[in-house]
Image 1 (cartoon, rainbow, N blue to C red):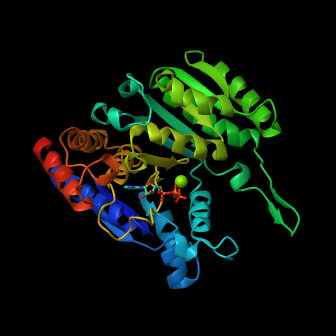
Image 2: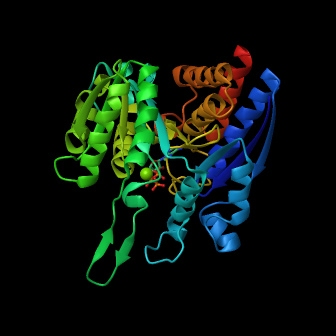
Length: 351
Ligand code: ATP
Ligand code: MG
């Protein structure tokens, strides 16, 4: 098949892990006879430097015309003054809103070879298999903001329609997996959470085959560390999802391993590793590219409908986790290029 993929390498390690990921997608195109076309555009800090804007109009236009968008990371100390008028993160928030990608899927599994790297002493970590569905275009991140010398506010707002569409995705996903959905809120305190809970509960009548459970976010933060194997699909609002998925990443052994897919209506999605721009290791060629490469697997599956190719990439990554080489965040010595080469070899062997 032919597909147009826009890449937004961004800042910090973003360009390093994105280049590795494009190499993997090019190998997939070659092995499986697809015609992927790539075009690269600035976003975040590098876009501010080049144009004054974190999301230039040309970048957004290109994303709107693409079949899928692959993003590295945005931000870094150079642009992190909290008083600055334009910040890199605004570019990413604006892109998510403009593309209407309201559901952020973050799959989490723990490779058996890495269970030992986890800070948790849990003998059954390798059984963890969760997909988080984080609401991505509403809540406190997008509500009205005010700031004076003495007071600041961030409005948290959700509509029934916003809750319904993301919950529906989560129910469908649970139906295709182990039929268990956990909805996370703070309904004992927050009005938005009460709306969230009643909407999800009402929708559950349409999914009698899915077991729905509600959890308060504070106890969920603990349960994720003590009983992560219990969960199948977890759906939650924007802020809670941001925090819980970083926490959950610790189970996998490294932030550098985890992918994400942001989806809306229609096939186009935005794919990015869950890690940030990692300024402490940027430019050294040591970033772990596997979270970005696994994001490309999600891109193949969800935007291009190429499930066999997605599984080939995931299996190549699993082989590298099993046999090495490993990057420094996973306790190894390998740089980005050596990890990429090993993925390409595993992919060629399987094709
Ligand atoms: P953001 O605010 O953009 O989400 P963050 O504050 O969560 O960023 P990261 O940039 O993700 O922080 O980095 C957190 C830590 O994880 C850093 O020490 C960084 O070096 C490490 N890290 C992140 N991504 C990778 C990667 N791909 N490979 C190796 N280490 C990584
Ligand atoms: Mg972060």
